[in-house]
Image (cartoon, rainbow, N blue to C red; front, top):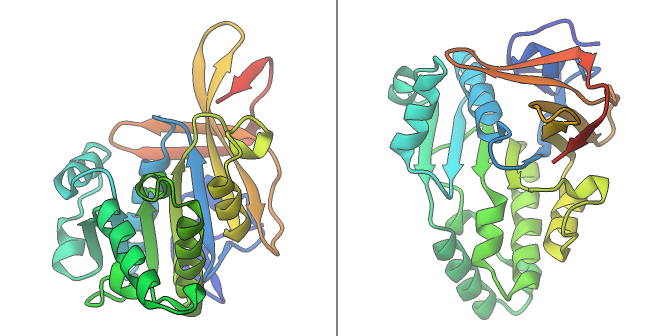
Length: 263
């Protein structure tokens, strides 16, 4: 099991710097992997991504946070609430927080597909990745917003996703891609749409964060690593805590027990 608990990228693996998460993997996340961070509203997806990004910036890695929902200032406020200060990282060129319009992405893809004779040969960089910033780690928040912008054009969304995953892999960029899911798709409760299935198949890993409803009416949070292609990891649902001024704490030895429902 992983013994190092500080963030970093070495020997072909990325460590998040979140001890409980890193300890659940034999080596870490293979560099260049695209990892889905899946969960319902308020489960803590964005915070997990922000905390990982900050941890990596602290060891000199460049992080790009691409928001398709919240404004940049709202994300910065969110970080401050949990004791993370992005100011110095942004000033030193280690962190770029940028908001994108998902509809602009969809229109750009439509234009590229109209020009291309072969739909799978479009280049996604002009419509997504800022050319002025070369990241080690990319956070995309969220795939749900991008998918909605392709409403009625599911196959175009899949083409775009294929190209995006291919681009990230070819540039050896590790990525966390947030997906909103009120009912986790991988345990048979999601909508099972073509878009969700395509993204799950294309991804190298899935980290699921759950809202837990216990039989006595109380609520909690939990998480599991559901998929990590080619790697060994702990297969269990464990306690996931969020504390003001501290952020995410994962307790890998505290398995969720009793009667409960995952949402």
